[in-house]
Image (cartoon, rainbow, N blue to C red; front, side, top):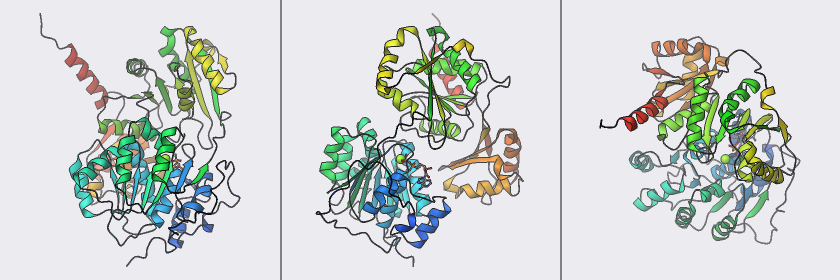
Length: 511
Ligand code: ADP
Ligand code: MG
């Protein structure tokens, strides 16, 4: 019989006389070793296996408090390791022998919920048989209801979908002991306030609540007053990493704008670029210009079906698409770790949006380019951005940008889609094993592997794509023959669908 995840159950009644942590914690505690935390040897070994050698600053500041059972309100930027900061206490509160939902994480988008689910799965590996269920919109309720009937320890989901389950009675929260609001401000942005309140009210009073948010508008304070008990506060002030983000502005005439994007790409040759447009029409126009010039570009827009959106994101994140073209709304919730460049195809009227856009690059230990195209009539917008930044920006002439190579800019990887996924018990290791074992490729030629419900996506070096496809189809996965197709760009289903859509618009009855 498995032991509880963490025998050192946290003290569930924090003492009120303990003063809250100074809310301006700017540095991390000296000792960043996970070993000092009350975690099981198995959990510590798993962290080492994941390559988590030290705590990140947000983890170091919050885990001692949350593992002691305190409620927490925390502010830290994207990529700072917040998931483990709430996942470790959540797992510590868990009794794996009880097949009841004991922890719930609310996230703003399906993508973030999926990422959180995956990260919790990795962190839960220290213990056998912890069931984590993702409850998000965009898929039918029925399979989720069936999974819930089989019992789950942890649910991760969007407030709307969780509320649906609560209203239908398919989700029971009586045994819940941990509630997490992840990216709370974004959930509010997306209009989830009422749903969040509804869901939180269904949770037992005796529980630990953690709230993570990048900003603290009044509505967050309101939520926290209503649903957190004597929360400890941890704020890691965003150290301005503008030194890692190299910003450049280029003046262009409106009609040169889209061509200038290609020029920037040919000059800087970033592996992954996120290109922000102000409108959907601009997205479509830019996509066409880039594809006509041979770039592997995809667009993220509202008309995509969930599966198509997933495919676009997977191809971009696994480096088999060079440019992702998106509006701010479509890019919401997108979290790509390795992004060499952000291009502001157009100047946004909102300086905060500019800061948010460029913050997508220059993550972790990497530098990033933030390249902006501005037409002469947009100088007032630029002036507002400069004011917000508090520093002058560099201007460079666009015509002096030579292409730095004659080779077309192509992504290093190509995505193979395997028709088979979690439903067929396929795991990333099976795919990696098939490619490096029987098929004879070396691990360096294989990139990210995403296993979905019905499909699996694996990135392979572009030059071995056809051969990898052939050998995967010739071999077996989990004892079965599988179909494999190459997600090629362009000309893939996304474009087909667009041209179909356009055709149907044009197909008017003759006069
Ligand atoms: P956030 O939610 O703050 O944006 P994530 O929790 O998604 O950040 O973590 C960002 C990345 O850092 C993930 O790839 C995660 O696996 C990794 N990570 C988290 N904690 C650690 C750690 N202590 N050491 C190394 N990598 C970590
Ligand atoms: Mg996160």
